[in-house]
Length: 272
Image (tube, rainbow, N blue to C red; front, top):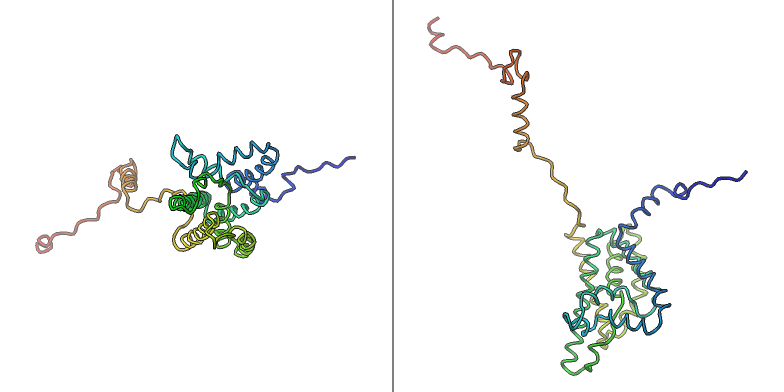
């Protein structure tokens, strides 16, 4: 007689099942999944389509122009999902976002990496603009292709290496950051704009980690405070209890307790 296998859900532990149920609510899951899906997409698309996508998503000066000459919001958003080189490695590095979400909370983690991405892009493209204006770069540099998740990943690795829980896991992210650092910072002595952006992302990640450590708790929904004793609500409820029929003495009086007998006056005592 064939043995009936138990359902897959019962074979998993309760903690693992709870973790799987929470995955769709974790922004790190969706970002890592999108980067992993982009790997085969960029491999299967024709080269001219890939080039057109990267050109449109590039965060260069031309695309960062305000509408209608450019599309800054679209390029800043799509760029973090379109890597240029070593496509397979970015989802691995982006796993550090799980540690960042666990340490900072989902909303603060997304806000932190997004802010650093925008700030580092503004810094590097501002540097490109300044060099073009002063003649150290040709005018064509305003349209140099610049896409990829590197600013987001460097920030996430830095935050994970300093704020991840448990503490021993920080060594894993620190090792990954150390492995990636030589390639990411190559060209920094020569003023390479991408290397400057990576260094700025790393420093911003350290600053965010310090700010979280010394005064930025994770964002949580505020729960309504319990009513304090003696509030208007309690006074009203107390008054209603006092005026309920039958809550006083036997004759149905509304007085909550019988009044004590008055002492006789001094005149009465002296008359006796």
